[in-house]
Amino acid sequence: MGTSSSSNTSALSLCFQKNNPPFNYTLPIASQHFSTVFTTLGLASNLFAFVVLVKSYQRTQSRSRSSFLIFLGSLVVTDFLGLLVTGSIVISFHTTHFNWKELDPDCHFCNFMGISMVFYGLCPLLLGGTMAIERFMGINQPFSRPTNMSKRRAMSTVLVVWVFAGCIGLLPVLGLGSYHMQIPGSWCFFSITSEPWDLTFCLIFSMVGLLSLAVSFVLNTVSVVTLFRVCCNRESVQRRRDHEVEMMVQLICIMIIASVCWCPLLIFIAQNAMSGLLVDHISLLMYVRFATWNQILDPWIYILFRESYLRCLLRKKCCQIPPSTSHACCSGSALPLGTRYSTPGSTFFSGGLSCGGSTPN
Image 1 (cartoon, rainbow, N blue to C red):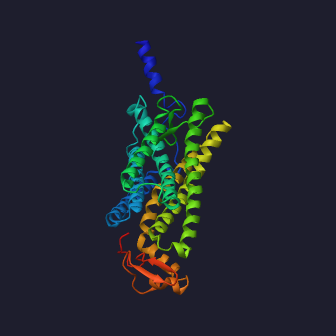
Image 2: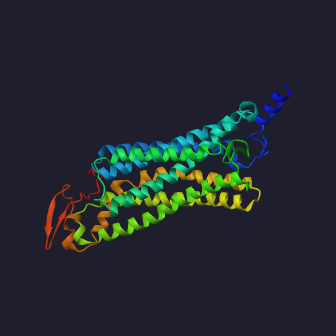
Image 3: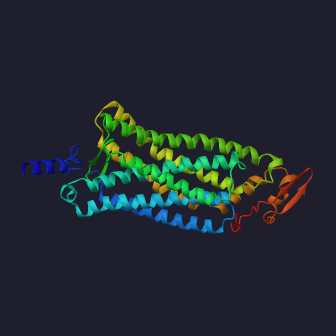
């Protein structure tokens, strides 16, 4: 009996040994109303964005854009599920004030939330890096890969990203680091300390996130420069670039939002783990909330920067080039897709640049 009692005590204190609930913590950012509004806004935004992406996917005839929309759809689904899972737990805690020790004496529930925080945190960053690689290859080496399997390859790639992020999330459960209750007692996250295993996992989490952002920045920069040079080259006008401009604008916005929202948290985790200082729980909570804005702002990129709006901007830009090469682009009605028209010394194809937004691409 003595051994059994000692074992139960040890299991009970596994995820509560660093921060032992209940906590006397009343910061407004941790209130029930803040969490409810935050989660509801994110879920509604992602649901709306998913509908927009589905309609765009049904209209598109471009294989590269279909592949890109699969990535965007996966990002929306991931953000939606992340807010749904973690938000439900946080709101339930603030609503019912359940006792974590009685509900979860073996820390299974706490570990589940910790895994969810890591998984749904890394997935948007990894998917952003993956989309940057896909667009880099599509713009810089468009003929070096088969396109007839692009949709299946995109789905397989998304699955690989999810599995990779899930494996990282499982590391603390397997002994590399550990998940612990966090103030104000409504969520669990991995331990940020300088202990060897905790430090290793903190660096893995931070470096994977920062590396994904770095890859996105470098490849997106190269892709934008390449796309700009091609679009400004009269001899390459026959390559249709309107949908590629649309994808790059969306991808750049995704990268900027992810960098602004996630860099503070990733740097904070790495700095605290390596310095060995005690974690400021108020700062940690605020950085996590700030990172969560990524899941709320992402869907508005797809909602606001849709093809019709960007094509209008592209048409205005096109009208700035010499009249001899912009006649069809700047005319009141665009030529049908694939229509060939001639100018002295060159032959061009119509890109269907109209502001109606109904032209498929």
